[in-house]
Length: 418
Image (tube, rainbow, N blue to C red; front, side, top):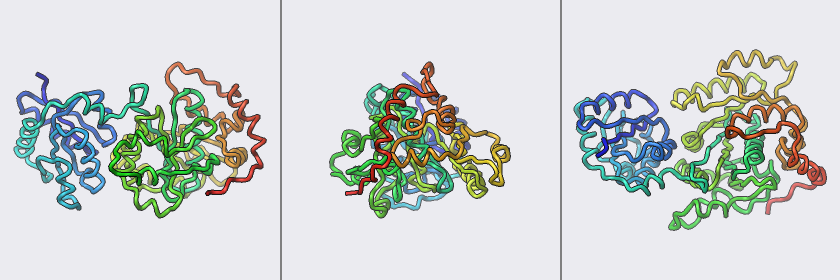
């Protein structure tokens, strides 16, 4: 018989430390595994197997946090849930009940009360069937969960959509895997425009379909539009007011569905730290934070990173990108890099070719693969490729072939939305 396993879901490590200390007094002694993001639960279930008890901390004490716990409970009904909050959640009682919680502890909590809750949780848990763990950790056709790369910035105009589309193209071209872009700039998304696509549907249409049909993953690709390069795109809503109807739990469901259908998922976000954006962060393998060479953008990047640190988002998953670098603008790259000791994954120069590539709806890596911006961009993305993958940073056959067809489209009018 295996020892019980307890999962502690909380950004602040103090709760996990107390649970580990108290659990050491139980017999048999449970294994305690900390987790700082709801989006990692599925991966942990794949790696660690089923858990007997989930202890959810104060960072889950919001309406969106309770909704995420409800999703976990729905997928893993055999796992006992213990809520440990510093204050009662600002939510209706039914929202708390739907998490499946067997106990609600008020932090700080005495060791005795925590121990009793853990003992009760272990006794009430039931052996979880293998299919439950599989359901909670969506895997794609290759048998593994997709990597999620989210692009963010604290200020607008930093080139998030430019970077997202080129990242997707780079992965598509060099791995020959299934790639998609989810446009989470729900009010003013630009992915479709940047790739000159004419989408029929959007993420809002996907989420507003018949609620009785719960197979979101099964219908996901029907609501996407495919680019010439092979990238699939789930567009932002055409009507900005539709953004109000999309909640953090909706984003979690969409990204989980995308992870089950694609090998790599690229997420473009607005310049804000909303609950919707944070939901994407929870499921992200890597986060790219962008800034441009002006003082407001640089300052806001610092504020943005400090906020992520307070939210306990692992710094190891954060990569910095400096875009539109120029000389003689009153500040230089060396000054900026001194402010961010973690360094930049890539410093991309200002280039007119970028605007041209957007106007023809093709990523710069395909439109002008030998340009300086393409070389630096590709060099910064090479670490993402699977080990042993051969990468040609210079012109290659596919890029050359695509480039020949692009100039015939250069002056084609932008199609009107129907």
